[in-house]
Length: 107
Length: 114
Image (cartoon, rainbow over all chains, first blue to last red):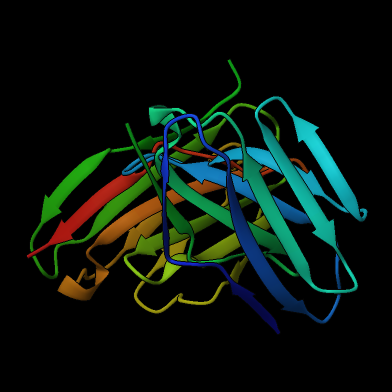
């Protein structure tokens, strides 16, 4: 089976850097996704990691360590619009989602 | 524009009154699925379809039906809705049966059953 853990909520200040962690246990690894979801809206794709290491995409970076079953999403230069939930997901027989981390960015 | 379209966006209905939520994608994707999202529980898969006429149960299929007569459409049917089906529903599609592909989500349907 699959098990994914993320913190429930985090807060940060505009302009700061925040790291959202995700740990997973899976019987077969096939990559890890990060999605962003604003309240009441659809999740939108942020990143996909299948190899160990850091992948950078503008203000957002995603890191993966397969040996540790661990990933994080790094958000730099936080903006108010980054207030959202961040979901990590692992594809197995289906996409299995964590419950999400709600990020609140304050001025 | 590549998209997944769900209708309706909002629906309030009464217990026992059959309803259908439509989902259509214009990307020629093989794999489609339905999720429900509830506070504290995250996204849970209801049903999925790997191709036309091929559907299977996800994690929480009780009380739901689906069909896949055409590649682009994947409606979700609640034959006799109950209040515990009040939730936010998302349809999603992926390019292939390989689940390690990006999922594209519809706008969501907020369903309230009274």
